[in-house]
Length: 434
Image 1 (cartoon, rainbow, N blue to C red):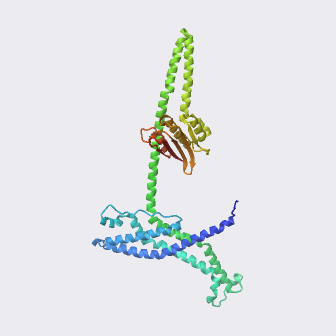
Image 2 (tube, rainbow, N blue to C red):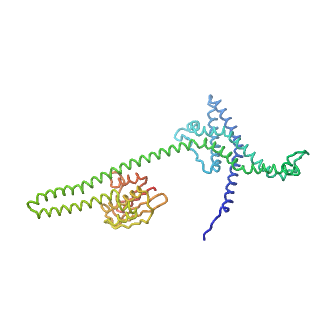
């Protein structure tokens, strides 16, 4: 059964969210005003006494106590502004000097920048708190008074007068004019109550967030940017290393395969040219052998071209390419690669070469009787797993056959892991982001 919801069904939920946020912002501002009064008195008093008596060393413990007290108010304020801003505000890490002596640990707040920012907030939070409090109290008071005016108009004395305003508004008496004007004012303030209260709460909350968490958030952003830069540099280095390994392997394969065959082909054709005048039958046999060498050279060149950019991967996608790869493997392959939509070419190429290199290593070194290949689309990317029941002992360390493959995966932004205990097979797992 399918249930449909109309736009009217969403209105109660939206209204409840507005009312809930209005209540959160109101209580935040109303409670912030007395807290601002308390903190400005305590912080300014502690700071003034501490600075004034610091010359005789008595002021240092007073300053430490004031900074510690400011930290407590700051922790409370970070918890309060979370619902106003709609997200949790992180708590900065304060300097502790745990490895120092007890005196250094006691005086640590004096050298901690965030502790001083907490005290500055305690001194100056009264300014936005007072502004926000005035707006919130005014709007709530006028809203409630205006909307409820017909209920208490009778309790206010109204001296007799000859006002012309009731007649201008179409009323026969002044009472109707008073009610209409006051209720109208109440409706106006009620209509603007949410944005005014919301703006007042945000004024106070943003001021608090800037002093209590802004520096720490900026520091975290810088650290994250540095980490991203390091990752990018590592990916670049991995890409360069993978490219160098691939070029060396291609150069070796060309030198050991097609190049040697082409040299032999040239020698055979030269010999056949000399034999045509003296021994035509031998020349024909030499040409036939040269044709065979040509076909074998073409087959090796096709194999090398598949290693560079497999046509089936480009034309038909990852599943078809892996199916063809599994069919050429000398070890039986159990392939689990469900159909998925076409991915980024770099991701498809990396996944293909992970499986291709893993199957090559299985065929050459593992003595396995079976290999299982799984390629799954997950929420965070593409998960490629190749496992066998061979002798194990594989490693990602430099100098091993999988090091270049690890560089290729890291160059694509992914990670690769190998679990290969001796005698218990090998499981290679690569996670590639999409």
